[in-house]
Image (tube, rainbow over the protein chains, first blue to last red):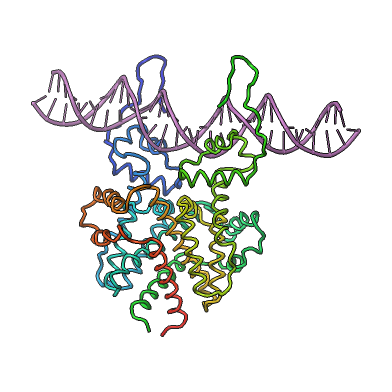
Length: 231
Length: 231
DNA sequence: CTCGACTTTGGAACGAGGTTCCAATTCTGA
DNA sequence: TCAGAATTGGAACCTCGTTCCAAAGTCGAG
């Protein structure tokens, strides 16, 4: 890529014509992450894709953490932005939760990022919307924080799992995936040490992550209902 | 540490007397992690502490991931091991959940490890115990997996938060911590973009993570009760 | 006891990646 | 038009996981 002709002239590749900007850098980062996964995003790769040097990027992005945070915020905003929503009710919260799940599933690296650094803007944004949508449900003041936190935990847990799922086994079917998982265990203790896991195992092949996530949300909502007006 | 005397003799530091083993390596890794946090654990630091070379470690531990996984499993076993338990009921499950929370809180790097690589043995072990303790509750077969998963998500979410909390702000009080958190946000959008977060903020100063986690567990349990025999 | 094969050890060396540095280039405003 | 500021490109630095290999120890067969 760099031309080192014999002597001293033509020392550098020509300077780029269009200016860099945080916006294009972040977008390019997202492209790389989506296309080739988390480990493919390096400052060198990013610089190459933008036909520039790694150093130039640092004038727009202070470091890799901030870059990933910006990428995550970018995606999360697409989900939390549009809907301060019409009918605020359980249904809207359910929708938010599933929307978040869907973004994470579509961009597994986002799951890793959200759970690696909670309290980053992207997480805060999700937490905020959860809190807002919780308002119409009749939750005692002293419980609102705790309940919102429980929903947030559900998101973070799912995020971690999505990230790991596609990271460990990019193209494996679920049966092979489970085999890989339990293999790691069997090495450590007898197979009979995990009766529940092995009872559950067959279901893994044809189970629906999204549905499972939704069931968890319903459980939490049912818990709220039960806690606020017991029967 | 290495003696390079003038010429060619005494080329190496003497060989260690006591044999290395996976057990001592993992335990030393845990010591470093507990004392100085996640980023302090490098093969060089570990080797130095054991008065050996980095290469020697690879005869006992195949790589860093496996080392961290082993360290995590070691700690988790202390919590899941002892109690197949007497009276299996909601209370036992609650106890397990809080025990897990307590280990994570005592070893924040464990939170990072559990949520970075779910499906590692340590996570599987937790999931297994959750599943077992769920058995006596009257949960329809087709829901057991989903319910167990919801509890696991709660653990993973809390794990991520504990890891981040002590990582970002090792010695900060919570007020300063929140300030740091929201500062990162305010840079990105107006403070009025996060009404709920700012409403909650004051509570952060004197709130109890453990209690909050327990409230989430109760919510899930209440949800189960409501789902299995509605009123 | 002795010798050779195998295992373990210690440390150097490699390669990758984040970050810093700096000279060259371009831009901006007086 | 020109000096100062900002941007760019790429080399260089540093740390870290990992690999390599020669030295040192261990152990069983003869």
